[in-house]
Length: 248
Image 1 (cartoon, one colour):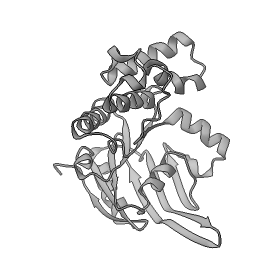
Image 2: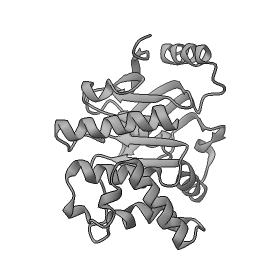
Image 3: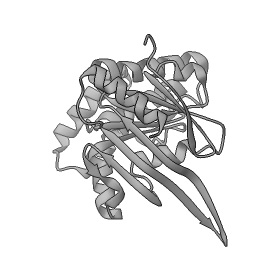
């Protein structure tokens, strides 16, 4: 059995939690480029407990973002199984997977992907347009999300009127506005100065600790990884090291 799975299971068992939120077995991903096959992930085994905060680290090309995209349902594995909250998302078709993502995953990217012509409030509301919520309820939920990330007073501001750190916090508000089961973050501080990065990481840590959000974050920054409960290292598509929670 993969050492990472064994260690995460031990942590899960000691904390008394139930079935892992994310359960991965024998996961592989291969891309076809012309006549070449490029295997990016090799038989990954991994459990992530509900309410955990994981950092994925490794050199460029190690498969971090590929693994993150698979967990978030943005891509499908070539082989193996991937279950999130008991649902085999590796078995879902594109339409079913899109509906699952909308209801269960919040995405935070390095570049904030905000709509420049819309206010912070309207940007946060965007995921709710896919729901049956009324306009009043969408506005209320977006206001609550902005308050949670400390930007209630910036609701009417457009992205160009906000700092990089504020834009990322708007992006986080957008990611959590539908109360997703899982937050996946791809280099969320990669475009920020150190102070703004620390503010964003502290916010993610608070969402994890105080609001129970399960977070999987890709980062190149060891200082960013310190905010997570666990760190996984990948190299050439294989889990090579697992570090337990700080203080263990």
